[in-house]
Image (cartoon, rainbow, N blue to C red):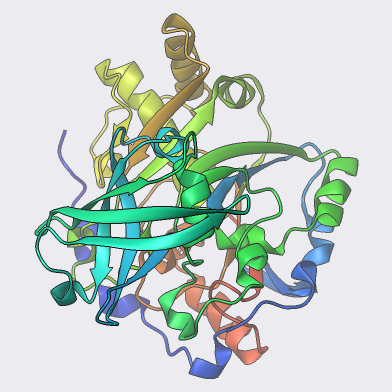
Length: 407
């Protein structure tokens, strides 16, 4: 299979816009659902409040949510000299690369990290800090095992304490760097969706931050089905594009988990699918392409390369055929859930296979998320963003929301 040449013509400069500092929401609103909501459908734009969103979701639709939970992934150690060394958890390496398994591990773990003030951490030096868990003081230790790859081993005292409890006690909430402030106690709950469940993300799936229990209840009463998947958002979501030819951007990989029940619902029901957030959209579209791999190539490894969807295929299965192939594979292997990884890069020229609508916030200029929105709105992203800027919408993670319908 060869790659589409059209994506080679996508230039980064076409996806820039001016985002004034005062438009960036530095703190969340008092009430999640009071945020503004812009709806884009068939070229038309309308303005609402987020708590009204049940009015715009057709009865019988399926909304798909990412139930990942943000972990306090920023660990700060202080040496005897007073120097502070910050360790930011990126992805687990041992005893497993599966995040859910590492988070419940109660012995040592190894992570790939980003290290602030690395020069102050001497080779083979061990950093230690005190934490309190259930009223008892424990010691967490960090040992550099590979300086060039920034691989760090963590150990701790206390029997049968899972790593998730360690980071909850020791870590800080990794709020986005563009907020230019320190995390507060309020961020512990507000930089988290009300339905977050599975620990492992180092950034929130921010489209879901607007949902309240009341909004979810109203959707259910209307007959909108909720479905959940897990994509553990990585720090790569903040990685800026530096290449003018955007297809050369080294797209970050993220881990996804789908249950057998979820796959059954996708395979057996033909509903309108509304992705809540770019992470859910990325997961759903990646799931489709995994089914394509099973159908056309017999590949069972769930890894979606960055440009795989832009290959020249002679023919492709529809979304239900693709999901049925995955369902059959899972039943053959007696799997209750399936874990995969994706590097998929959704940009103009992408042919959406699963999602009919997208709930999402307003994103940074020249970012992979702007490219995704541009692809889904057939290039009308500038019209939407200009309208939002002119109507005092709040941007980025703690900002306002949009409901975008595909053409």
